[in-house]
Length: 236
Image (cartoon, rainbow, N blue to C red; front, side, top):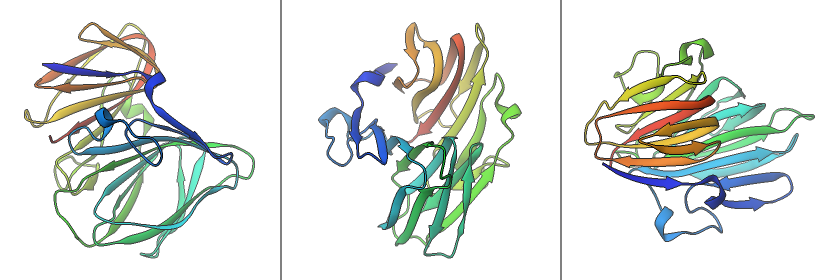
Protein backbone atom coordinates (compact mmCIF):
# COMPACT_ATOMS: atom_id res chain seq x y z
CA UNK A 1 0.00 0.00 0.00
CA UNK A 2 1.16 3.50 -0.83
CA UNK A 3 -0.43 6.68 0.55
CA UNK A 4 -0.08 10.33 -0.41
CA UNK A 5 -1.34 12.90 2.08
CA UNK A 6 -2.71 16.20 0.76
CA UNK A 7 -3.22 18.65 3.67
CA UNK A 8 -5.86 21.34 3.25
CA UNK A 9 -3.22 24.03 3.77
CA UNK A 10 -1.27 22.93 0.70
CA UNK A 11 -4.13 23.39 -1.75
CA UNK A 12 -3.81 26.16 -4.29
CA UNK A 13 -6.14 29.14 -4.01
CA UNK A 14 -7.54 32.11 -5.86
CA UNK A 15 -9.79 34.99 -4.85
CA UNK A 16 -11.61 36.80 -7.64
CA UNK A 17 -14.02 38.61 -5.36
CA UNK A 18 -17.11 36.92 -6.73
CA UNK A 19 -15.31 33.54 -6.60
CA UNK A 20 -13.09 32.06 -3.92
CA UNK A 21 -11.63 28.71 -4.88
CA UNK A 22 -9.28 26.05 -3.53
CA UNK A 23 -7.48 23.76 -5.99
CA UNK A 24 -6.64 20.18 -5.04
CA UNK A 25 -4.80 19.76 -8.35
CA UNK A 26 -2.96 22.08 -10.72
CA UNK A 27 -5.48 24.44 -12.30
CA UNK A 28 -5.51 27.97 -13.77
CA UNK A 29 -2.60 29.87 -12.20
CA UNK A 30 -1.86 27.17 -9.62
CA UNK A 31 0.71 24.60 -10.71
CA UNK A 32 2.38 21.88 -8.66
CA UNK A 33 4.32 19.20 -10.52
CA UNK A 34 3.23 16.68 -7.87
CA UNK A 35 -0.45 17.57 -8.30
CA UNK A 36 -1.11 17.25 -11.99
CA UNK A 37 -3.59 14.39 -11.51
CA UNK A 38 -4.29 11.27 -9.45
CA UNK A 39 -5.01 8.39 -11.77
CA UNK A 40 -7.76 9.61 -14.10
CA UNK A 41 -8.79 12.27 -11.55
CA UNK A 42 -7.68 15.61 -12.95
CA UNK A 43 -9.51 18.41 -11.08
CA UNK A 44 -11.14 18.87 -7.68
CA UNK A 45 -12.05 22.51 -7.18
CA UNK A 46 -13.75 23.73 -4.01
CA UNK A 47 -15.69 26.82 -5.19
CA UNK A 48 -17.50 29.48 -3.17
CA UNK A 49 -19.58 31.69 -5.46
CA UNK A 50 -21.06 35.03 -4.42
CA UNK A 51 -24.82 35.65 -4.75
CA UNK A 52 -26.01 36.00 -8.37
CA UNK A 53 -22.46 35.56 -9.69
CA UNK A 54 -20.95 32.72 -11.65
CA UNK A 55 -19.30 31.37 -14.75
CA UNK A 56 -20.49 32.71 -18.10
CA UNK A 57 -20.92 30.46 -21.12
CA UNK A 58 -17.71 28.56 -21.80
CA UNK A 59 -16.72 25.34 -23.61
CA UNK A 60 -15.48 21.93 -22.46
CA UNK A 61 -14.48 18.80 -24.36
CA UNK A 62 -13.33 15.26 -23.58
CA UNK A 63 -13.79 15.46 -19.83
CA UNK A 64 -16.24 13.88 -17.37
CA UNK A 65 -17.41 16.68 -15.06
CA UNK A 66 -19.13 16.04 -11.73
CA UNK A 67 -20.56 18.84 -9.58
CA UNK A 68 -21.60 18.35 -5.96
CA UNK A 69 -23.19 21.36 -4.20
CA UNK A 70 -22.29 21.45 -0.51
CA UNK A 71 -24.46 24.45 0.30
CA UNK A 72 -26.70 26.71 -1.73
CA UNK A 73 -27.81 26.14 -5.31
CA UNK A 74 -26.39 26.50 -8.80
CA UNK A 75 -28.28 27.57 -11.93
CA UNK A 76 -27.16 25.59 -14.99
CA UNK A 77 -27.70 26.19 -18.72
CA UNK A 78 -26.01 24.36 -21.59
CA UNK A 79 -25.85 24.03 -25.35
CA UNK A 80 -27.80 20.75 -25.22
CA UNK A 81 -30.87 22.67 -24.10
CA UNK A 82 -30.78 21.83 -20.40
CA UNK A 83 -31.67 24.60 -18.01
CA UNK A 84 -32.36 24.25 -14.30
CA UNK A 85 -31.08 24.45 -10.74
CA UNK A 86 -28.76 22.06 -8.92
CA UNK A 87 -29.51 22.14 -5.19
CA UNK A 88 -27.68 20.89 -2.14
CA UNK A 89 -28.27 17.14 -2.10
CA UNK A 90 -28.09 16.92 -5.87
CA UNK A 91 -25.24 15.59 -7.99
CA UNK A 92 -24.67 16.70 -11.58
CA UNK A 93 -22.74 14.86 -14.29
CA UNK A 94 -21.74 16.23 -17.66
CA UNK A 95 -19.88 14.27 -20.32
CA UNK A 96 -18.29 17.02 -22.40
CA UNK A 97 -17.25 14.60 -25.14
CA UNK A 98 -16.93 16.16 -28.58
CA UNK A 99 -17.86 19.56 -27.14
CA UNK A 100 -20.40 21.32 -24.94
CA UNK A 101 -20.90 24.89 -23.74
CA UNK A 102 -22.48 25.77 -20.44
CA UNK A 103 -22.90 28.49 -17.84
CA UNK A 104 -23.25 28.15 -14.08
CA UNK A 105 -24.41 30.86 -11.68
CA UNK A 106 -25.30 31.05 -8.02
CA UNK A 107 -29.08 30.66 -8.06
CA UNK A 108 -29.48 32.88 -4.97
CA UNK A 109 -29.20 36.65 -4.80
CA UNK A 110 -28.66 36.42 -1.02
CA UNK A 111 -26.57 33.39 -0.06
CA UNK A 112 -23.19 32.09 -1.21
CA UNK A 113 -23.00 28.71 -2.95
CA UNK A 114 -20.26 26.20 -2.16
CA UNK A 115 -19.68 23.29 -4.52
CA UNK A 116 -17.10 20.71 -5.49
CA UNK A 117 -16.40 20.57 -9.22
CA UNK A 118 -14.50 17.45 -10.24
CA UNK A 119 -13.07 16.42 -13.60
CA UNK A 120 -11.94 12.98 -14.77
CA UNK A 121 -10.44 11.94 -18.07
CA UNK A 122 -12.97 9.79 -19.99
CA UNK A 123 -12.32 6.29 -21.29
CA UNK A 124 -13.59 7.30 -24.75
CA UNK A 125 -12.77 10.44 -26.73
CA UNK A 126 -15.19 12.59 -28.69
CA UNK A 127 -18.34 10.82 -27.55
CA UNK A 128 -21.75 12.50 -27.84
CA UNK A 129 -22.08 15.06 -25.02
CA UNK A 130 -24.65 14.33 -22.33
CA UNK A 131 -25.99 15.83 -19.10
CA UNK A 132 -27.81 14.46 -16.07
CA UNK A 133 -28.52 15.31 -12.45
CA UNK A 134 -30.21 13.58 -9.55
CA UNK A 135 -31.32 14.28 -6.00
CA UNK A 136 -30.05 11.71 -3.50
CA UNK A 137 -31.66 10.85 -0.16
CA UNK A 138 -29.12 11.91 2.48
CA UNK A 139 -30.35 9.21 4.88
CA UNK A 140 -28.87 6.60 2.52
CA UNK A 141 -25.34 7.80 3.29
CA UNK A 142 -25.65 7.64 7.09
CA UNK A 143 -22.74 5.55 8.44
CA UNK A 144 -22.22 3.87 5.07
CA UNK A 145 -21.12 4.78 1.58
CA UNK A 146 -23.70 5.73 -1.02
CA UNK A 147 -22.46 5.39 -4.60
CA UNK A 148 -23.73 8.43 -6.52
CA UNK A 149 -21.66 8.05 -9.72
CA UNK A 150 -20.48 4.87 -11.44
CA UNK A 151 -19.88 3.41 -14.90
CA UNK A 152 -23.06 2.83 -16.93
CA UNK A 153 -25.34 0.01 -15.74
CA UNK A 154 -23.10 -0.97 -12.83
CA UNK A 155 -24.68 0.59 -9.71
CA UNK A 156 -28.45 0.85 -9.61
CA UNK A 157 -29.63 4.39 -8.91
CA UNK A 158 -26.25 6.03 -9.55
CA UNK A 159 -25.56 8.60 -12.22
CA UNK A 160 -23.16 7.28 -14.85
CA UNK A 161 -20.04 8.51 -16.62
CA UNK A 162 -17.69 7.28 -19.33
CA UNK A 163 -15.05 5.98 -16.92
CA UNK A 164 -14.50 3.04 -14.57
CA UNK A 165 -14.79 5.37 -11.60
CA UNK A 166 -17.05 5.46 -8.55
CA UNK A 167 -18.04 8.46 -6.44
CA UNK A 168 -19.18 7.59 -2.92
CA UNK A 169 -20.52 9.82 -0.14
CA UNK A 170 -20.84 8.97 3.56
CA UNK A 171 -21.87 10.93 6.65
CA UNK A 172 -20.36 9.10 9.61
CA UNK A 173 -21.10 9.56 13.30
CA UNK A 174 -18.30 10.11 15.81
CA UNK A 175 -16.37 7.01 16.93
CA UNK A 176 -17.65 4.87 14.07
CA UNK A 177 -15.73 2.68 11.62
CA UNK A 178 -16.98 1.97 8.11
CA UNK A 179 -15.39 -0.11 5.39
CA UNK A 180 -15.00 0.40 1.65
CA UNK A 181 -14.10 -2.46 -0.67
CA UNK A 182 -12.80 -1.49 -4.09
CA UNK A 183 -14.95 -2.57 -7.02
CA UNK A 184 -11.82 -2.93 -9.14
CA UNK A 185 -8.72 -4.03 -7.24
CA UNK A 186 -6.49 -2.27 -9.78
CA UNK A 187 -8.06 1.12 -9.10
CA UNK A 188 -6.78 3.93 -6.89
CA UNK A 189 -8.70 5.63 -4.09
CA UNK A 190 -8.84 9.37 -3.38
CA UNK A 191 -10.53 10.38 -0.11
CA UNK A 192 -11.58 13.98 0.50
CA UNK A 193 -12.90 15.04 3.92
CA UNK A 194 -15.74 17.49 3.31
CA UNK A 195 -16.03 18.16 7.04
CA UNK A 196 -15.10 16.52 10.32
CA UNK A 197 -12.10 14.39 11.23
CA UNK A 198 -11.15 10.80 10.41
CA UNK A 199 -8.26 8.35 10.50
CA UNK A 200 -7.21 5.91 7.78
CA UNK A 201 -4.28 3.53 8.27
CA UNK A 202 -3.24 5.61 11.33
CA UNK A 203 -3.22 8.80 9.21
CA UNK A 204 -5.38 11.59 10.65
CA UNK A 205 -7.34 13.83 8.29
CA UNK A 206 -9.36 16.91 9.15
CA UNK A 207 -11.80 18.99 7.12
CA UNK A 208 -10.68 19.50 3.49
CA UNK A 209 -7.64 17.21 3.83
CA UNK A 210 -7.30 14.43 1.28
CA UNK A 211 -5.51 11.11 1.00
CA UNK A 212 -4.54 9.16 -2.11
CA UNK A 213 -4.18 5.41 -1.70
CA UNK A 214 -2.65 2.88 -4.10
CA UNK A 215 -2.35 -0.91 -3.97
CA UNK A 216 -5.14 -1.67 -1.53
CA UNK A 217 -8.29 -3.79 -1.79
CA UNK A 218 -10.33 -2.36 1.08
CA UNK A 219 -10.17 0.54 3.50
CA UNK A 220 -11.39 1.12 7.06
CA UNK A 221 -12.34 4.70 7.91
CA UNK A 222 -12.61 5.67 11.57
CA UNK A 223 -14.11 8.94 12.75
CA UNK A 224 -12.59 11.20 15.39
CA UNK A 225 -15.66 13.42 15.15
CA UNK A 226 -18.76 13.37 12.97
CA UNK A 227 -17.59 13.57 9.37
CA UNK A 228 -18.76 13.72 5.78
CA UNK A 229 -16.45 12.05 3.29
CA UNK A 230 -16.18 11.84 -0.49
CA UNK A 231 -14.40 8.70 -1.69
CA UNK A 232 -13.46 8.50 -5.37
CA UNK A 233 -12.33 5.18 -6.82
CA UNK A 234 -10.50 5.92 -10.05
CA UNK A 235 -8.47 3.96 -12.61
CA UNK A 236 -4.73 4.54 -12.71
